[in-house]
Image (cartoon, rainbow over all chains, first blue to last red):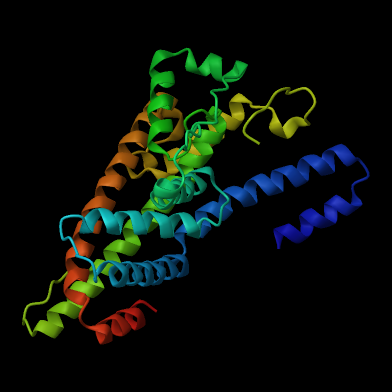
Amino acid sequence: MDSNNFFHDLHADTSLESSRKKRRKIEAESHSSETEIKWKSESAQRIYAVKLVEALQRTSSQNAPPAPSEAAGGRVVRDVADRVLAMAAKGRTRWSRAILASRLRLTMLRRHRKVKKASGSASRPRKPLPTAVEDRKNRLPAVGNRVKILSRLVPGCKGIPVTNLLEEAGDYIAALQMQVRAMTALTEIISVSQGDRLGSSSSSQA
Amino acid sequence: MSSRRSHSRQSGSSRITEDQIADLVSKLQRLIPELRNRHSDKVSASKVLQETCNYIRSLHKEVDDLSERLSELLASLETDSDQAAIIRSLLM
């Protein structure tokens, strides 16, 4: 295995600097391939779909007694799907932490609105930090504008450096792709099983 | 982690280089189906960013549509708990 050779070289190498460089390279490569594998694997998709179903059933059992509003249903599902997706990230990415944090903030605001009066907390603690290299790239008006738009599309990435933003965007896209795959499969399974239950002869063929 | 005051104190890994940015841009390019087939040298960073934004927007829309569909399906599911067990086993 390649990794074994790497570690062997690390031990044999007397120079600390080159071994440090090698270790960083290994970490960088494994980190990027980790993210790819994490969102691409079928087991991850299956686990997500199961957790999504469980979360949705919990939500519907909570809401059913009051008054199930059909109109808001899609929004509720979207929120649950995003929350479960963010949890699958295990807190390692900024976008996932931002999704969970905003949910927490909303539920806390709802609960504490009656008890606490003043909640004038600044919800934007981050300040923009352009560095020298970013300035060079961002001075091209097209790129700078696109970076700004991208930062608005990825949750929790408004004032962060470009490299972090690109990294977050890559992980976010991979996660969204898995979300779409899982929800598509889930929709198909449910609609097919519904079709069987209702006894309709023509079930949807993909 | 979000704020980097001085680059000189840190060792090489935290210095933002053009290479790092180029790497990340190419990684994005590989994820986006529109751009995956083209050679990386022919696609500018600006184009990759543009397509990334478009792609994220289209993914969001897809998730919204799927959420609508799922909420319709699940509304009719609520009454049947056996159904839920079947679905879970189908997923596994």
